[in-house]
Length: 165
Image (cartoon, rainbow, N blue to C red; front, side):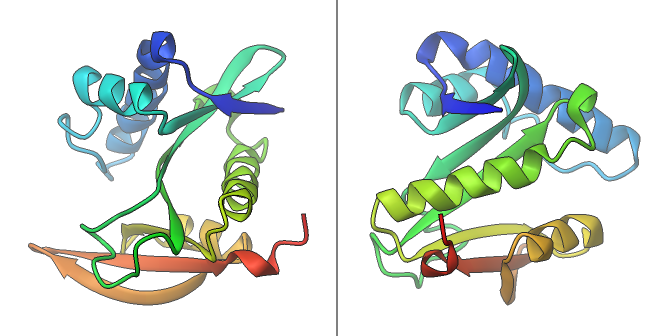
């Protein structure tokens, strides 16, 4: 599998993967992202800013992830420049069960290391047990649970130094 930064011309491809994942999650009765979270204009802006990465298998898109240098919304207390933040990790249904999330998280770890960031951090809705288990299987530890509005979010972190490369 190859993972590369999404080009601005690939914003529609990124949006399609995110929307496919959002529809699947909603059909399972567990809606996650709001339409505004994955709106084409927002995805285009984030892609143009270099935030999205695409995983491909034999040139076919398998999944996407957004990596941010800062996350003041969910991690306001964290020192600027110390972490890389994972957001919007999504896998196409055709690639479910092929380890794509782990490959994307490994890529994020490597990128954090190359950028000199000491931690890889992410968050998810606190009641998403399968997602939390995925993060823990990939070496993340629960940092804390915070509340935003009426929702609880589990915040996970991984010291990048633990990644052996």
